[in-house]
Image: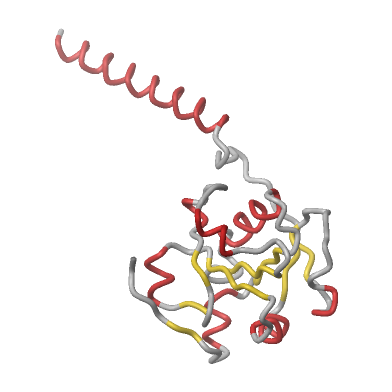
Length: 169
């Protein structure tokens, strides 16, 4: 008899937890879609059009060649969307770390991002969606010059471009 009660209690707690989780997720700013929408990304043809104040809030991506050109520009900030451990291991030289998984619109790291500067967000490689999600979040906050570098740290290091490591905070 006690075993049936225990199973019923466990199933009740499990059902309540699932309902509570679904409810919280539906009202959370960083809620996860139950059915992930495929993001359409336009790959920019030229670096010349980067930096125009685009209010369409659509995802735009850059190539390795464009990332190389932009890397030397003072008005460009590279943002690594990976977690702090991966960032510490290696990242594009001069990049800052804003992990997508813990992104909140009021984090202090956003104070280093000017809405007037070009922001290039990357993660591991083109199969990584963290950079796309973080870029969408930045676009929604009014950072209209945010772009995705699809090749990520993998393509960057394969091309033997400058990287650096950092200490974990």
